[in-house]
Picture 1 (cartoon, helix red, strand yellow):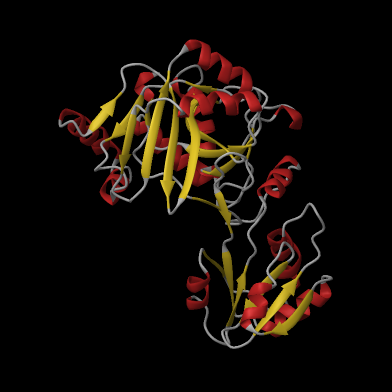
Picture 2: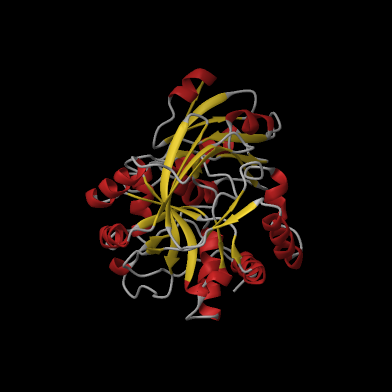
Length: 374
């Protein structure tokens, strides 16, 4: 295998199960602080000492008893609520119908290995991976009951996010949630490489703390994450190149002005520009294929020249600033549909790199899991 090869991580088998853990939480003034985020990028051996120092100073709280946590956070006017627990990793799916967690992007094994090494030496899961699913009614009702009760923690962090956290320890409620979630299937929204690192850690040391990895499960039908597009710039490609490749692959390029191009964005149509002229680029995708798949799998290989590189941008402004007028083309992508992404993952397909952007993500430091707790 090539060092930079992109592969599919293994599949965890049903039942989907989140187990209680003893939450580690930074104090509100440290949550969302860039310095806290940088802590986990430092040499591994210095992190444990810094965390111990913070705990002695009252800047880190460690729960005495394990719990599942209902975590609600509000950022930029969007409120997301998810169940945070230790995801069971010990069983691998033998058949597609047995899969509990669905990746939709490939991972680079070297990067997953590095993350596994880091978390093993830290003895921490520093932040939960984000999973989304369509919850069953009983799980939704149970968590709604929790959210109507008094919070265990409520605060605004340094990044401006508002957080509310409920610790769930009642045995009857925990059992109810376990039964309600068992048949669920979750899509990885953020954290493909951390998920793959969890599986590497579990394979290296089965039967212990690494049999679980920290995860947050969001009900996309209740408090959905926003799924936005990630735009592209193709270097050393012209609008004429796009038109030629589109014609060769059953698509269509149509010149137009900027406003009309942006207004035409839909599941099969991109807005494109070289910084001087604008147009629309439509590709045949049907009902079960994303336009970003058709772009990378069909159109890019059919280009008469280039691209020398493909770069990615999260905003229209950054995309336009990132292209050289008359030398590159910018492609403004439509936002993917969550259910389409789920169908693609269920169909054993991977989307191209940086095809989805689930937002907002919670600030790091709200909930951490120590592997020393088991």
